[in-house]
Amino acid sequence: MKPVLLAQLSDLHIGAAWEGVDPTPRLEQVIEAVRALPNPVDAVVVTGDLTADGGEEDTELARRLLDGFDVPVHVLPGNHDLRGSLRRAFELPGEGDDPIDYAVEVGQLRLVVLDSIVPGHDHGAFDAERLRWLDEELSKNPERPTILAMHHPPLATGVPEWDGINLSVSERGALAAVVARHPQLRVIVGGHLHRVATSALAGCPVLAAPSTYLQLRPNYTPVDFEGEEVVWTDPPGFALHALRDGELSSQVEMLGPSHGG
Image 1 (cartoon, one colour):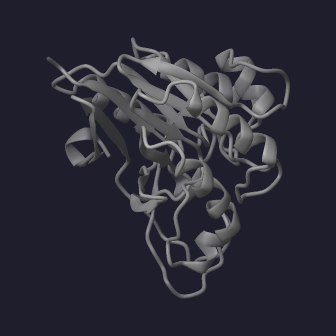
Image 2: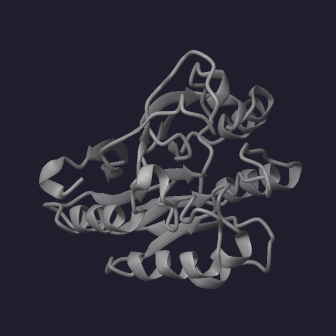
């Protein structure tokens, strides 16, 4: 029997032109690569930053491109997105600019989406209501293997500038207190970093997926994100999460020159 397969895309940045590169063809390449997998995926999750600045036109274009999948696509906001635009384009639950939190079933797998953005800022955070919602939502189905998806991955990179625009130590600690109560969590997935990174939170694996656009090379000396010290590089990529017999495995696929990357 085929495992439950969930593809994860992140940081599409439709509308950007970083390094003179158009993100749209790269997203199309990733969609093609996912569709060409030996086994079809059951659903797709997009962990934020679908657009460069949250504009309605770019958000609608992201929606049209993601319609290239013939399976359900579940999205959540990143710090470059606007909740209202995303909610309208993808018909997400809730109203207006309220946080976008929800849960869906993907076969025997449960996907819980948690909004980690702070509008107008790059870093992520959770208020007490967000964490209370998460705790209650995870308590509803404690036996079903679950993936928690958010934009900001709860891990430290060792790069102060990166960690400064991610989740703080206190935010990770508050989230860890909730995660520790729910052993059905198999992995926490995010994006935001534009590179693959792994860690663990309260014993649960954490994976930051690559961008479908450009990757960011690590620099462990002080850098200016708006300056020349930041080095963007190829290729685009995506993550694939497979659930079989209650066990979950996560892999990352980077597209090479044969994919036009």
